Length: 99
Image 1 (cartoon, rainbow, N blue to C red):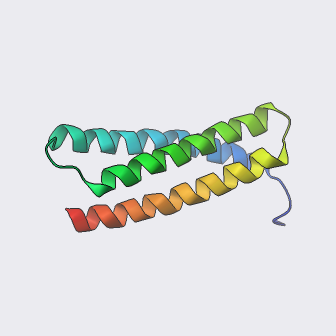
Image 2: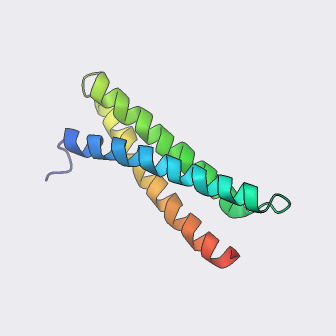
């Protein structure tokens, strides 16, 4: 597929995936806060930022589907989701070394 072509299926998949990944990030942050209240971990901060990026991705994907496929929302959705995936990988690496 050409990179200049907009794909509504891609946006739908990002929308659904982002919703699931937001909840996973928030569950992990909540687990850390319940299990160890006295200790603040850097992975908590990364997962909170990751959740925000997934949320931005979800909202922009919804706006793209709802508002008539505006290119700005398409680019924002793709970029926010890519940064969120990178932040998730960084969070996993940090979590591996913190535990």
